[in-house]
Length: 244
Ligand SMILES: Nc1ncnc2c1ncn2[C@@H]1O[C@H](COP(=O)(O)OP(=O)(O)OP(=O)(O)O)[C@@H](O)[C@H]1O
Ligand SMILES: [Mg+2]
Image (cartoon, rainbow, N blue to C red; front, side, top):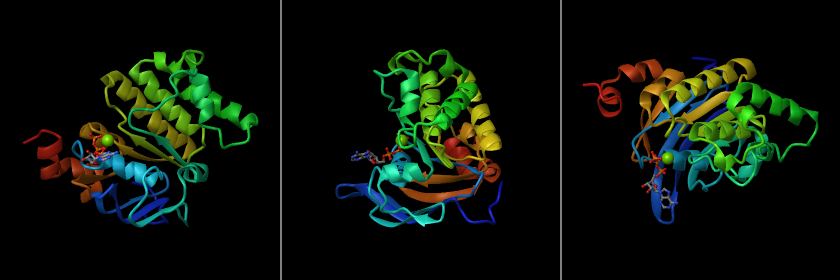
């Protein structure tokens, strides 16, 4: 675990949110410290995507606070959060399927001046994701699931994020692709110092990749600990790892 003594990069306190009159998130508090990889795990419908979408400003917070890089962003519009350094690879990837892979990547840099640094970052993404490079002129809609996920993460990286937020890293992907993604995300942290907050259905994958984790159940954080301790926790083992 890294730098947990300094100031958190992302600090969420008592966050509530929902849809219409239905409350989904109940007093969620969570931190990501610089250079950390943090996972959020929980069953289908627990509120994980709602949490990430609220952090990115796609759903308004009802109450509580979200601070990022020392600033209160609770009411800040989503694009401004991205400009401040939050990169998002949403559940379902949401690529522009009628555009080429390269144009999708460039969409991730739309808030930046189109100077030489954009080309540098494209080259960096291509060096990280060989399959994205190989298919850069193909339509994103014609990529495999794994390639689409890499393209979505690459697009998020084009905004030069301090924090990369990923919803459902491995959903629908073959184990060999998941291994690739784990290696790439670890390298991103090492090479660029990027912090990562990820939601991951496969709890073993989530705990292997992350330093710390939060368990969300019915919209509340019910457990938080180092990933190592969570992996040994009786409830986590029984409910999420299928170990009795
Ligand atoms: N747009 C929406 N309008 C109304 N209710 C919604 C909406 N999106 C999600 N919900 C509800 O909010 C709850 C939490 O959903 P959410 O998508 O956050 O769960 P999740 O933990 O991401 O689940 P999964 O693992 O299946 O992705 C669920 O009961 C879901 O039906
Ligand atoms: Mg979800």
